[in-house]
Length: 503
Image (cartoon, rainbow, N blue to C red; front, side):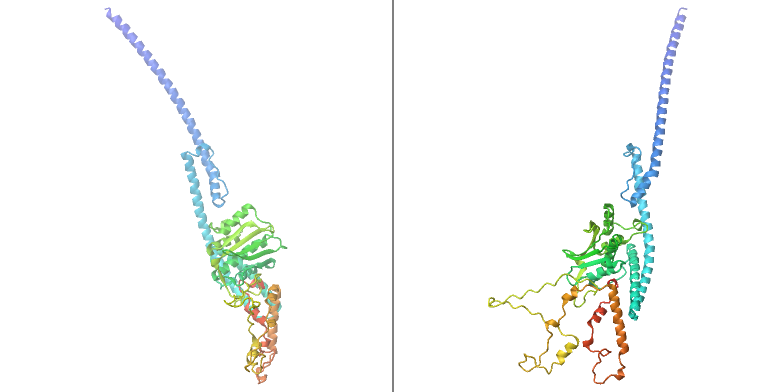
């Protein structure tokens, strides 16, 4: 009987201990649950903050970074903003956002190139049609110039031809920028003719002063004539546009070690450092040229120069200042693009400036071995007399049969040679200033009027004497009545690249 109370007391104690154990475990579980709830709340708060930060980064990417990256495709100097949180830069999120910017820039550049190529193709086709129409108009104007002798009408036709030449230059430049060919194939020409041909395509050509310091006969190969004329015209156009109308633009032609340099100096406003770098980048032709880079309206002069320098291996530099305060532009033509023409057989245009160089004098021949060099002064070689021309040549060859010269010991006739005083003086021709376009037009009109008057005054062939003696002033005028200036005017009738100077 005594064991039951002990068992009850033991069970009660055991139950009490179990209750205490369960209570302690319940307290621990409640504390753990509280901690977990606090951790969950912190994680939720952190997640909400990360979500807000990510949303802000995406909004910042769409509003600021993507437009800046797209603008950087066309304007390299623009800066693309970074992420809002600097710590995001090296994270996977930051790298993913940077990849988005790179993809956007690549796609924008590709689409821009594709759209620009389509625009260039359309403009190339339009300028081709315009060029063809302007060439037809040019041919019609020149036919009218040759048909009519009225000086006033000739002056008007020259003015219209000059206006047409300026329109043709603008169309040609637009075509070159769009990837078309220059449009014309020329013969080998004197380099000074190409320079004056580019000068002739401008409205202010009278403000350009050309100093020719080249060797006589310095010429360009055929495929380089038109590109050089276009480049010179565009460089001169920039110089004339950005300088005061009462100032001159000075052009100098000089030989250098690797070819020839055409230096253009103006007294304009000059360029800032950014403008100078951009201009040099355009004329270098290293980067692809897009129409959207040329402004609105597009300024195509420097872009056309860049196309031509890359295609024909020319060099243009606009990075230096002119001594007159403006810009100095230098075109260098390599030796592989130069050739030589005989200035006697094919002289430059009559309106082209004469070279300041004098031909190198021939050295006297060395004395033969064994000759007495101290017996007297060395004889100076006498130049060969100029051949007789025209009527004088006939008289010296055929009319001297009955004349005995002073040195005819054998009784045979001797030809009479012209004296040195009868030879033309080239110095006077070189120092004579070039004719103005108005004077050239008036001279041509006077020549045509005189020719028409002489033809109308010529007698009928049936009324001419039968002795074969030609009448002076008529169609049968002898060589003595021939005016060499008429031949020179006809021989140097202005072509496309040299006609403007004669205008």
